[in-house]
Image (cartoon, rainbow, N blue to C red):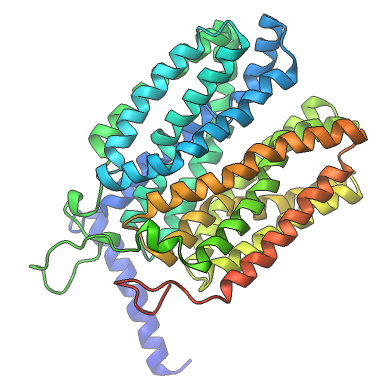
Length: 441
């Protein structure tokens, strides 16, 4: 290393150390986006823990209480996902117009009220209706608005920030689900639904009222906490393409199809993974342990993906690699389900699934900006929902017809393979051009 390079490296290290010292001594404030991200992680953990991750805990109590079949109980999952997907564009548009803060607060109140409805369930049609209402309101409460919010506050470190946000989703399965299991055991399923509503209000209302700001400008800062050379310059506003402009680009539809196929296989597997393990002779406890290991390891892979992806020029190529990893994961189980194979499966799966939830936000914000991100993301959700609704149902049908998951795994492996190819095609396409991004993303 020459003298100039050594001097530059020393200057960077000195600058970092000085920055840390300034924060510790109070001479420089921590960027507000990091405080916001901390609150968002808590919200994601609680929101996903009491809803998505805990759904499986209610299956057996509802079967026992009402005599419903497993298919009848779990069928509400597909219906509710479909309902949430249909409302995605409306929720996204509302976020872009009114700001995430309003949507989060109203969504939290309505979600809590929907849990009150669910606690009164006495008929199967009510279970389907109330679950669908709850799913729509949850879309307003945490996943979509917090992705939009964090994307507004971070640019250079958006991948890292979204990776940290994604760990909240994993923490929900790791930390909140055991608490929900205790709640159901002590107060039964209907008491647990009431408790879920109380938890939502207790966590989301303080975060929404006290911490959430719609934009960096509302917090009196700039995106990434950067201070411009001209201190009198106005605070920057978000830029980006409108929905109508975005959907007219071929890039949008190629990526939409790639993401749909990606989550077609991923969501289908998440619903059927424990039944798969049981079908090959494993106990429910063993299958649940493998699932828990995947969720726990996912915390680290999501964080790692967030750190790495900010240094990657093409998010689409990253998507290609993730889809290939998921193909390898299911391909391993298709060949063998022994202990070594399960270990190899987990290694592939946690890498591929770790970055999955961040793909949409990273691709869309780089390609179309953040000004109308939530609206564009909402349309993406509609397209994805087609796969998420049909994949578990078709998988169950194929298993009932064949008596094994071999055909199902082949189907999902095919979708991952095609998704990987489409991500590669997208990486070679010209990026959309818009004001503030004249050369494309």
